Image (cartoon, rainbow, N blue to C red; front, side, top):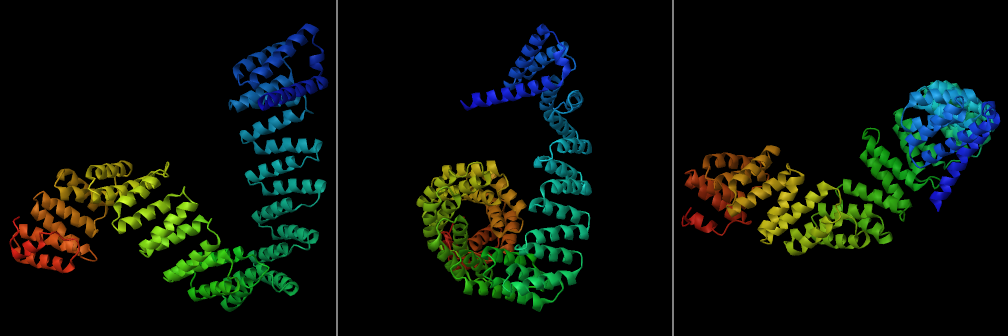
Length: 573
């Protein structure tokens, strides 16, 4: 029903343009009745074909119209519209010019001409057409704005201002237009013009102090500090708690290295109830991001946050800011407490859930990771992160079976995010391997490497698992070598590569990479000591091998059951 109604409206619009054209152009009236009937029929069929999308048929009907009445402006207008749709702007421009010449008073023809000129980047001529339209329709605000925007698009700042001046003569002073003029005068580096425009707004809207603040800022930008300070001090005299003015003054004094004054005004702004707290938070974040610890020290920033927390204890945005600062100071428990408080008041903010979950992960608090992830899933079942962290927390507790369920559920939420999908496959691979579903684990790792062939961790783990099974060692060597190439100083990857070479009986190469593994490992585990001992033994250094095995026994983490026999000399290699 709606489609039919729209079709009828478009049909009527085209007829109205045609009817209007017939009234004002004499050529049509000079046709005999038979020609008029044929012209009208062809024209209506052209409209019908154009509306249904059959542009070639429409052009055929319009060509027939021009055979009957070659000077018809309305037909040239319709053909030009079709040529615009097919991006034939040269042909459209010629016909649009002819349509306007045939009927200069038709608004639609001029709008089409201006549109084509704009598409051909003939901006000044397009602006001239809009100027003609405005002269005839001075009450139509949109045409002023279009003409001014066109001049702005080609950086004709003064011409755009002239258009806005004509607009103001017709419609009076308005905030949006005056603000645009201020921007344009600034681009022209015309302080007087910009300040005059701001003064107009100040006179018209005396209750809006922000325009006085903008005027002060304008003076500061042009190094007329005395005028700027006079305005801001005048504002403070009338309203001592004006937070915006205090922040302007703070920025001004900080820029002038008058840091004591800057600090004083920041504190007054932060304690001002007239200034929205969200703005205060953004201002502090701006100071943090500036990275200028000389002009604003970490102690000052912490003091500013403390001011806010003490005065606005129940404001959740301030508690979130406080959490960020506590985390920065490595006060992780206190930071977590702030996030938990926010969630106790509002559980529908996923950004806070995310911060809390990542913080629990950073603290390696598996209980927190698990319980908070499960709770977050209740409120945001479509977010993958809680599934990842719940699964990781279970993996850390060696509960691989339940971890698989979380990873499989999270995998369904990855959609087109292939990197996240690869992460889930990687975790699933590790879980399946530890559940002795080796082939399923390898299938998961293959999925990861299909997405990212350079995933160093998966290349390493996959190679190590193959080496432990003594399977497909050539593939294991290739993958482990690639992991080491990607991260040449990773002790874990070097150990894996040494062990794969050992399994392939390339003992001298294994010893070379094992020494590198020991060098680059921050903490040498029992497994590394045992591997080193085995490789030393096969290279003939039995005394040092025993020394390494004893260190492995002392480390006591996941060494093989054969270790005591190796130390006693009873193990058969």
